[in-house]
Every structure is written in structure tokens, then in C-alpha cells.
Length: 221
Image (cartoon, rainbow, N blue to C red; front, side, top):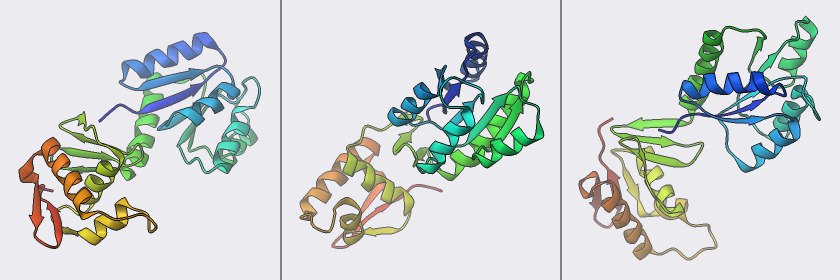
């Protein structure tokens, strides 16, 4: 699976570079922003697994930025990195929707441990592993042997449905309900095309045809 994507908001460019280096060396993909407007724009155009936010930054404060993100329905875990030591600021940070809080200067290993703990909890809820497959539900990506599969939208929906119901029969009706809206024409021929395309990608033996009923994915748990 791809590494976690982290948004870092920090207006001290030298400090931001040091944190970027630390995270990149640990296998994370990092996007650095030096003001909250840039950070906000990045959240519109990219999907992140974690936010690392300084509080005192140009434009909106880190706490105000997180409040706006939470109000918009963004549940991405967030950690405040700040030099503030007041207890009321700590309370304000959690009230803004943060998941954790670490004060400068901090120990690099402590920051990495906090990040790992948060990502393990949140990404685990959005990731399903079966045999040599990994389904990243948040980013709508499926991997086989750590390689992302090239799937068209309906192929992704179909394979995701099969993975969810591994070792169970997925009926043609279940597939139709997943792939098409109620006002769209449903084609059994199209289902066969999508199934055959997926078989060519993952291996014909991994999907069984259940004649007249549907299909079954046969992966070991």
C-alpha cells in the first residue's frame, strides 16, 4: 500500500524542512504549507491521512482552520504542533477537533510514535486485507502484491463488493444495485465484461461463476 499522506502546516520554513525530512525519511509523503490559506487549498485538491498543524500561522490560526475543516465534515486526524504551554490553549486545541497535541521542542521519536498510533487506528478502520489484496477504502484503491490495480470506476466498485463478500455469493442483483443508479439501464452483458476484465487483472481462478445467480471471490482470509 502507498505511504500515508501528511499535510504539514508550519510557517517557520527551517523547522518545517526538518520535520519534512524526518517524516520523509520514515516513509511518509509530506505536503508542506507555510500559511493556512495554502493548507486549506491543499485539502480541497488532495486527500490526506493526517494533518500536522502549527497554531500560530499567517491568515487563519491552526485551530480556526481545523474548526472550518471539521465543520465541512472533514474527519482527517489532526495533531497540533505548537510552542504554546498554557492549559487553556490545550483545551482550545481539543475543542477545535484535534486528536493529539505535542509541544515544541519535541523528541523526534515521540512525534513518530504519536503519528503511528493515530494512523494505525484511523487507517485500520478504512483498510481491508485479504490474502495478497489490500483495499484502501478511503482512497478507493485496491492493491495486489502491494501494486495498485488499474481499475475503471465500475470495476473498482465491483471488485470492492467481491472483496467485502469474500467466499460468499454476490448475486447479479447485488452487483446491479452497487454499479448502477435506480434510473440507469442495467446490463447483464456489462457485468460479464467487468467480471472478465477483473479476472484478467487478478487471475481467472480467483472468481467463480455461479450460473444464473452471480459470482464468488475465493480468497483465503
